[in-house]
Amino acid sequence: MADVTVTEFLLFHQKKSPHATGKFTGLLYDLILSCKTISRRINKAGLLDILGGTGVINVQGEAVQKIDDLANSIMIYRMERSGAMCAMSSEENPDLIRIGPEFPRGDYIMIFDPLDGSSNMDVNINIGTIFSIYRRPEGCTGEVRLEEVLRKGENQVAAGYCLYGPSTMLVLSTGQGVHGFTLDPGVGEFLLSHPDMKIPEQGWIYSCNEGYREKWDAAARECCEHFHKAPSSKGGAYSARYVGSLVADFHRTLIYGGIYMYPPYKGRPEGKLRLMCEANPLAFLAEQAGGAATDGHMRILEKVPTQLHSRTPLFIGSKKDVEAVGEIYRKHAAD
Ligand code: AHM
Ligand code: MG
Image (spheres, rainbow, N blue to C red):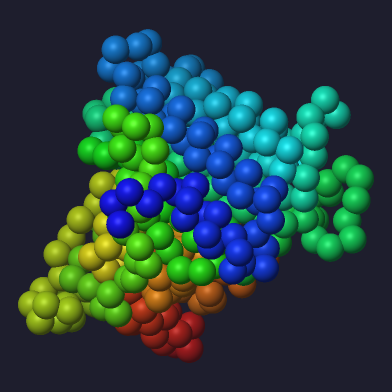
């Protein structure tokens, strides 16, 4: 098993998927190449002048790190040349990224966070690239319109992330389960290391920034208290873990189970996380792995984005743990 490459895996699975065409496999190949390039630059971060901020504040009102900028340019450069895209959207760009007339165009739209958790970069903690892929709606031609992009997450044809940690891992779903690949730096290839990943039905870890507790509403506070008191899958109390890189916190949740929570709080009524480039791709993976994702009131994948950078509260992970949150929110809505 250790020597099945991601390309071999995709070519084999392409035969089974109604969406997968040569173009789609080519798109994934270029995406993987972008992630490998980012991984390589990150490995050298302490040696090059790419740590720290650029001094620029992005569309989200957040400080842009040099490494965010670099990862964003790598993704855009590679993907606009892939021949598979008709538009893209990045967490770092306020507007849709259109594919210039000098490049061949395809039918796919990719929405991505080039470097999630980048504020952790300066302290050498795991970060990652998160991506979400859609096919252009049937019958649409010409310049891509915003409405073609603002679609529910359940329309994604693929989603995943690349985690830059002790090893670099690619976790991917094309709608047929979730599969994990680990980069062998010696040969520069991702090898299948985690086939058919499944989130345990219940976990033993809850993950949230409890520093915001006083700003949360009563429902969010009760969710957290639930995980303080309820028995975990191990019978004892839940443990708390919070990296502060969504992609890393999600990766742990995918493997060990449990729940990641980012509720809304005073001053941020929709929470902090972005629906299209963060919540949707991870919700797609969670569901494909047998887990669930909600904003407390509805399934993340059914939410209609109103703008490219719409935000959403997020509760994601093991089915039973996410259901417990849903029940608490229902009770509060009825009060
Ligand atoms: P980013 O995409 O700008 O890195 O921001 C999103 C990050 C997530 O990775 C992480 O879960 C969250 O912000 C942490 O936020 P907070 O510091 O409010 O807990
Ligand atoms: Mg992010």
